Image (cartoon, rainbow, N blue to C red; front, side, top):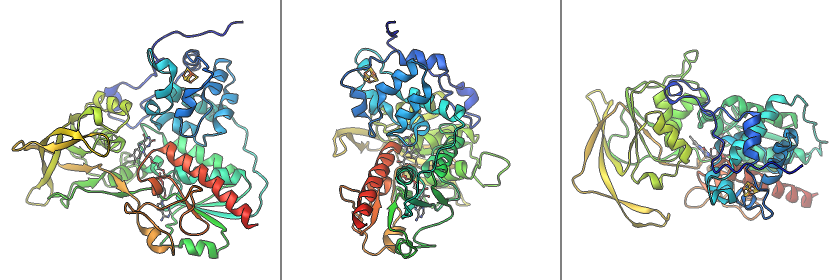
Length: 465
Ligand code: FAD
Ligand code: SF4
């Protein structure tokens, strides 16, 4: 029988909660494909010989192969194919910027929309999580202990790959919960925490031990881990140190870093009355920045009851680094965008609380080193926005704690660990990857780095035998 082919130029739309409903709760916005929708979308794939989409994926998921298995309704087989290269598919299917990766290379995108690779990956991963009851078999242990610092995507993928190779892996995580930014940063309405918990449980079934509330550099140092019998260590401590603008008024009550605001909201569940996590409920909030972090903070503020939420961004929509889908979701939910604007100071009332943010209009000049047009202030164009909270989402850098407490480990000017081609740092037996090496980046790049480091650690330990 000839293969059915779907000629539709557009992706099969994904059902979503209505904007006016979802902007008042923390339920997941995108609802996922049904079996029928997934098969219809999978039938848009041409199964191209040269597989350009695979080259667009940082971990080279075998895309046409897993899509073909969807067409033939072999969903578990599709899952097994994805899992050979991607440790966390239910997460990547939800948060990866596919539009600039695999989907940007898809041949169907030349005339029409590319195949919805991310949505199909999510469908397959969710199908597996909801229907598979088989326990993962624990690999035979080789008894060699490896420590992983940080339970974000870099640390978890490194731990998973090492466990499969038989290593005795312990992950040390500073927070009370594993997942890194996936649990403390990305909100429930974009990535339900249950999904992260399920992926973490699968790692535990492989034998990975996770010790939470363990701040390495305070409770134990990296050097002490080696004294305790660990033969190698991977550092995936991320880039959680927030930056501020250095303008007047940043010390006022009501000014937050996006990290603090999102951690209180997501990890510490400030949105849920059953938890007593304090958070400021303001009727007007300004979020400064144009990345995913800014979109998440703005959409959380809206859900926490703010009537007016402004995103203040110094360039235009075209340069905005946030995923397009997230920007559209934010617009639909009523977020007000003030592009070509930049804060110059934050004004407070007599009690030291934020009452307004003063901004200046910007205009774009020539391209700078980032490849984007540089924003310049327009003279005498200051204006005020009345708000009670300002959330800074202008970037983060790695926390210096591990560098300062580990002998012989080097970082660059940005505070990121220096690594070689095998992801080994300047300290023997200590490897690093993810945001701690690149600065703030993406989930899939962190995961890819964790996998590469697992390979490097295995080679290093094999040579030591
Ligand atoms: P992290 O996820 O930061 O994990 C590091 C872990 O190490 C944390 O759990 C931390 O508590 C722990 N740790 C730190 N120091 C220590 C210590 N001394 N001892 C023990 N543990 C320690 N990327 C996307 O691809 N798509 C998105 O949509 C997206 N949205 C984002 C939204 C937000 C709000 C944020 C903040 C980031 C977003 N990103 C997104 C970026 C992405 O989440 C990160 O690039 C990725 O999580 C980096 O992974 P990592 O494992 O290197 O670090
Ligand atoms: Fe399918 Fe697009 Fe990949 Fe071709 S490029 S195999 S159409 S997903």
